[in-house]
Length: 310
Image 1: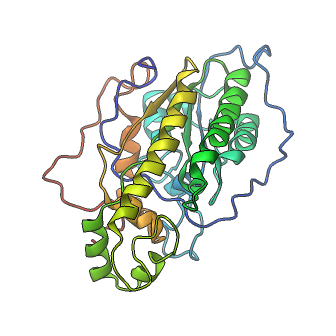
Image 2: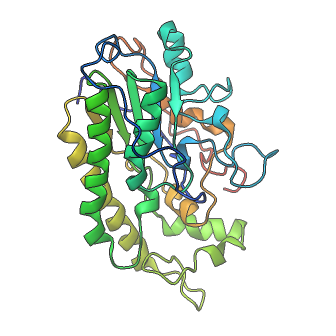
């Protein structure tokens, strides 16, 4: 995996995943180019992104209706100069990347959608140099069944990896970990700033941050953290079985508010903060980039998630 990514400089706010139908408007039986074809044997070029709304630019353009995608603001594949996406950075370093980009991520998508998304993306970019996968969020149930669902989740991730590696064995795959873990301190500050959010966090499930009396349920923060850890570990296990796949476990690098924002439906970033995500580009090994993106320093106190809130 070190040949794919040697580390992450700073990915400080993986976008959330709320909203959307989770349905993939592509034929599930669409067949990607096979590894034995003349196209697949050519040099890998381009960027593909699959997963949930963290990749679609959702809610990043205030001029559009709520939950609308803004593909140009995707941290992975967007074209907005303000975002300076992974795709934009790689195209600057490797000009042949330009125009070879596909993002089939869907708002609300679960891991069960990944294989179909991969097939659709590979029809557009048959042999991508880099495939970015961002998932987990919408698979979290918090109803007591997550432990039994983790294995199914892993199988679905493995199915997507198989689609990619069969069609394009030279592609490097990066599965993004879940950034952040829930923080009681942050949630309390968020509710003070935006009292209306409290109702969204009183969900009555095993991960509810507040109970029906309005009291903070600190034990549920630990419950949600354990659930996230279990999905992330399974994601890593599946990726480790694929030579060209790498995962980045980002919770230790990120800000704790991210999970609180996700639960309150306020998890998508404004364009000006999406470069923090694109910075996962990385300490990528050559021929990607000879430079290491400077990490966010401890003196940078801006909140990467909903900076106008906290």
